Structures are given as structure tokens and as C-alpha cells.
Image (cartoon, rainbow, N blue to C red; front, side, top):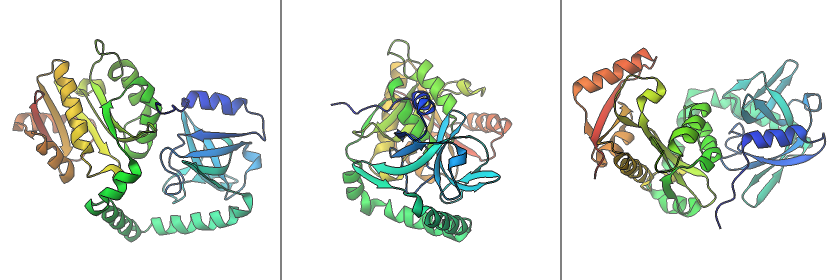
Length: 327
């Protein structure tokens, strides 16, 4: 049986806004404002209510433009909400309801209102700790240790088999959830590209996006290949962009499979050569590309690429790589 698809954000918004006060609804794809309690693919149960019915320490679902976000209420006068670790604050948006439960797989955890003071204290403590550089450094060290090679068998068991394939239009919601956590690319750009270029049928497709999806349809890795002119940069040819693998799926060959999928599609579309640019301090990505047969591009192309990105406001120096699309 194919994985059940979640309704689009537009459909969820329509249902929520039509829901009478006091009614409840399970919602997915709400960002990671409660990370690490809430992960990609988890769901929240929302009690429909307005801002007058929430108080400091409540967890709320808020509409910010086209996005749905879960936030912790930090203040009601003036209104201010934040993430669980205080990494980002929001002062606007429309309150759609109060979160009364979290669900991960078959497990559901209630968030009763008597726990509100405890959650508020925990949020303040986490935000204070996260503001210290040493805390973030220790966290990254622990994270890198856990997601290193020794944990690969356990992670492979937890994640399950991953299918690496070209993404289709029906994968959009799963892609936007992944992008909200892992990518700096705008949702509007991804939505437009997938609907108008990457997700078309074989005869009409231009460029392509590849994803690593689990049995539930969740994305654990992503990359795309397309012309840079789609992003307004005056660079010729096609380029592989945004190669990102979620920590739980790293060191499993996912990045290599994503690149192979995109190279094959670029060759099918008649592109003789494929390029990529990587931050010069991203040693892991450089090793991955070089392991797939990419080599350093001529100095003239590297200089032109860096100049184009400098003009667009990027400051990091890029290493440019290239290879034939044919294996």
C-alpha cells in the first residue's frame, strides 16, 4: 500500500478556519518550533480557539503567511511567541488554536493546561542555555558523535529502507516539511519549480529534484539539478544544488545515490556536463562529489561563479566542480 499523503497546507488552513471553536483536529507539517520534542512528520492536535483563549506557556498553532508554525507563547501583552529553545521569536501571525497533544507514529502525548507553568519554566531554561555558545558547541559534539558510523545499524533500523528517486508534484508537502528544517531555499521557489519544471512528465521535465523517502513518504535527503538562470544568476549549464541529508540518514550512501539519480536524469535530458558549487569549508560535501567523479573546474569558471554569487550578496568562497553526465 502506498504511503498516505497529507493534505496540502492550503486544505488544512481551510479546514481549520472553518472549524468551530472548541473542536479539535490533527495537523502535520507544522515546522519545528518544538524541536527536539517535535520532529518532521510528527502531528499536533489543535483545539480551535483565538488569541483571547491562550496564555503564557501555552503551545499554539500560528499561521505565518502560507506557513503553519507551532510556538510557545512567551507573552500576550504584547503578543510574542518563540521556539522551545528560544532560537527565534515571532510577534505577528494569526493564532489558529492551542496544541493539546503531540503524536509520533502510534504514540500520542497529551499537553494538559496544568503543565503550562512547567513548560514555561523549561522553555526559559532551554532558551537561556541555548544562548550560550558553549552549550551549542557541546550539543553539536554530542549530535555528531551519535550520528557517526557506530550508530549506523541502529539508525538504519529506525529510519527503515529509503527509496531514492525523482520527486513528483505529489511529494510537495513532504519536501516543504524537509525544507523547513534543513534548507535555506524559499518554499515558494521549491513549489514553483516542482510544479512547473521538476515534477512534470518525462517529455516535459526540465531540471529535476531527487529525494530519499521512507515508507511513510517522509524526505530524509534532497538535491536538485537545474539551470542557475532559474535563480537569476548569469551562469550557463546545469548545476547540482542543495545536497542535504538529514542526520539520521547520514553515512548510509544516500548522498551518493541522490547524485547518481540526478546525473542520470541530466544525461537523459541531453546535458553533456554537470557542475556543482560547494562552500570551501564543507569537507564532507567535497568528498562526496569527488567520490562521484567530480573534479575541480578551471579557474575561469570558479572565478565567474564566485563573482556571480558575490554580486548576489553571498560572502563564502565556493569551490566549483564538474564532470560529464554520462557514467
